[in-house]
Length: 138
Image (cartoon, rainbow, N blue to C red; front, side, top):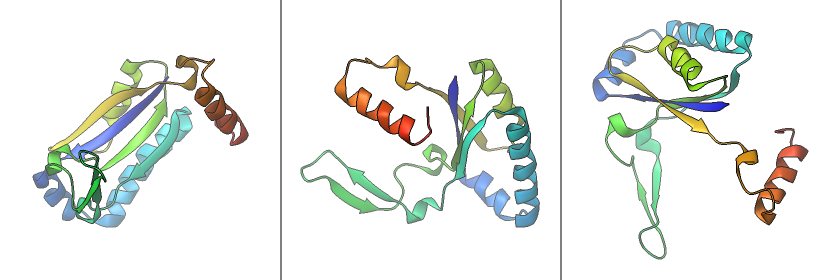
């Protein structure tokens, strides 16, 4: 089963992290990522850039409105994510507990449904399945 671990933090947590040596931070995260790789559960992992560089497209109007800046408060924004292939939600939770993070950091864990869970007779699902097979994702 695939699970997404969504990393979030408060302003205070980001401020505390700003004082951390960058090389030390890369070393700590790198060791955790290596554990995920060695366990064979890591499918993807990315950190996200500064939220102040983001753009929001609001579909409440026609045409959709485009504004600069983050959407929501810092504690609501994603700082990065992992996608893991694990046996259960409990295993995903255990990996999240081991993630290198301090006070003010939270990890939301959400299951990622597979294409097999959607109606297989749907033309769009069939096209997506063909694309996934062609790109080696299935």
